[in-house]
Image (cartoon, rainbow, N blue to C red):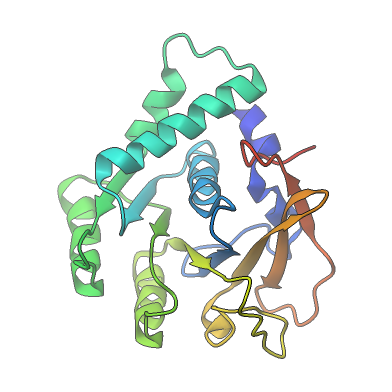
Length: 232
C-alpha cells in the first residue's frame, strides 16, 4: 500500500524534526466537531499498519463492530480514491490481522484496565502493538492524571499513543506556546500536537508542537474534505 502512504495525512510528520511521534510519546489531533477527528485517527492507524506495524484501537464511545465499520468505510474510500484493485481483499486481511479493537463503553475506561488488557494481548495472544489509537476521551472532563497515566503506559509498553481533542469555536483560549484549548494546559505531556482547521480553501492539518523544538515553522498539509487524504 505504498500509494496510501504517499497520500496519508501523516505526511505532515515527514516535515517534523523526528519524522514521527515515536515510542513512549503522546500525540493529539485538535479539531472542532465534524472535521474528521476519528477519520484522521483511523488514517494514522492505517498508515502504521501499512508500514508493517500493529495497532490497538481503543474506543470509548462505540462498540467494536462500529469501530471496525469505520475502518471498512475509510478503506473503501481509499480504494476508490487511489483506484486500487484488491480482488482478494488482501489489504483488508492485513488490516484485520494487525489491528485489535478494545471498547470501554458506559464510562468503563480506566488506566488499570487498559494496562491489564495490553498485558493480556501481549502474553496470551502475542500481539505487541507499535501504536495505540484512543478515540473518544473527553479532554474537558479528564484530569491531568489520566494523561500522565497514558504517558506512563506509552513508556512502559514502548508504544506511541494518539488521541483526539474536541475544540469549540466559542472558546479561544491559547497558551504562550500557541497551543489551543483544550490541550493548552497539558501540552507539556504531548510530543506532537496537530490542529485540524477548516478554511475557505479547504481542510488543513497544521503542526502546533514538534517534540522539543521551541519554534517551529508553518508546517501544514491540505486534506481532501471527503476522504481526509492528503492532497499532493
